[in-house]
Image 1 (cartoon, rainbow, N blue to C red):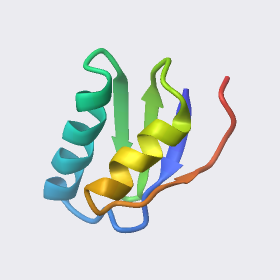
Image 2 (image 1 turned 120 degrees about the vertical axis):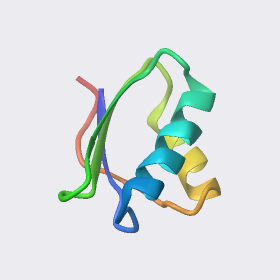
Image 3 (image 1 turned 180 degrees about the horizontal axis):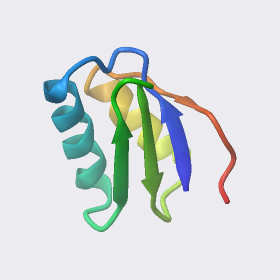
Image 4 (image 1 turned 30 degrees about the vertical axis):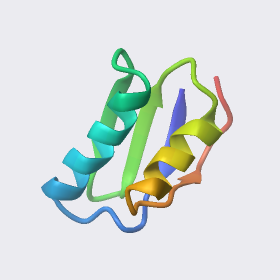
Length: 69
């Protein structure tokens, strides 16, 4: 599980774009979004770098807040 901070995430449209980008990588990932905190928690077996790269590609660079658990 990873928690990413996404500073540019500010609305429902952002959330939809972010979720779509992550689901393209892993359609079985569990994604929880906290819009006010600008954080997304993703449960997946993929490396965090893949997730961050996908988010950067759609205009939402992310910073990892924690190590895998």
